[in-house]
Length: 398
Image 1 (cartoon, rainbow, N blue to C red):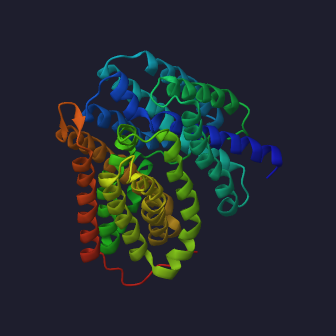
Image 2 (image 1 turned 135 degrees about the horizontal axis):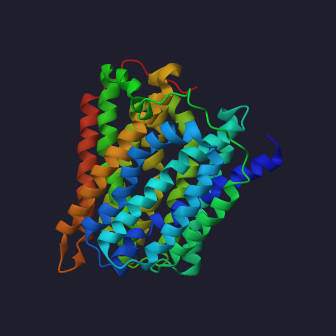
Image 3 (image 1 turned 90 degrees about the vertical axis):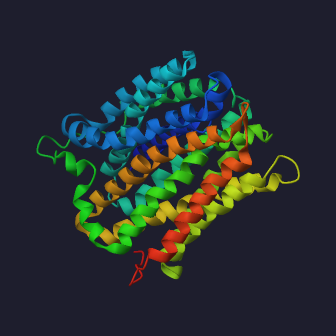
């Protein structure tokens, strides 16, 4: 890969995730501060990305891949998205804000698949080259959090303006990215292929079906973190909470390096159990943490993100790929994403909103009780997994 191509792809990936990190982490805090939103309303806004995750495969697979050059349609989507991100700062009602986030998410989520397509098109050895491009996405998310904290704009509309500016920049840059032509009308266009229904055959394998159900269920605790962690940390008195939360992404980047080694050494069941157990510990830390004597517990809850996410979801993707085999691995990964970040997160975001409202008294969040809810759910998933997941033969990473 030529250095200029590597540079363009790295900048593309950095901005792609910078945009997401700039508004997503602090949206709950923004809604609470400026829109006086309830827990349900915050949860509903976060469910927008889950809706988009379920719909975007149809758009990418049946429209974008067939008729348009990937870099051009990504440019258009980000330019329109920039306008919507700015308009978000002008809205004062929860209903209008919700529909704007839904519309924006429907524009943004396809760009993740498009950016991956653009990158893969330029690679001779994706297995070795893609991680070096994708890591700039994690860096972009971390940079967004660092800038929000450094500039002190966490509780302001400037986070949206910053995301809008980055979206406009990426929209323009997209038109000079390497050309990625459409696959043409001969490409597979069935709706079933967009969400990977070919992979339903995996459900004949009982261990995989048990894992698949656990993956959907664990998205409920995950939704509590994404939707309410920043709001909680601010109310708990942690200064520069958004900036501190980048420690979670840093730990994610570090722990992911250990995944292939541990996958072979301790096996998939123990890896997945470690990930689920970390969810319990995280929420116990949040339940008892504060900005005084137990500040370390807040930091621990943030840093555990690396184990929570990598040991379950990254391991889950690897497990899915090994189970599926070469023929249906793409369909299997698509189905796993649809079920977790689509169905699971949709259920989780709404449930987390209802739970938060249930434990809110006279406008005051009872955070200890709130965090025990996802902790108990995680305990239930762990017990379910221990008793029912029986993998006869350990699967090895490549």
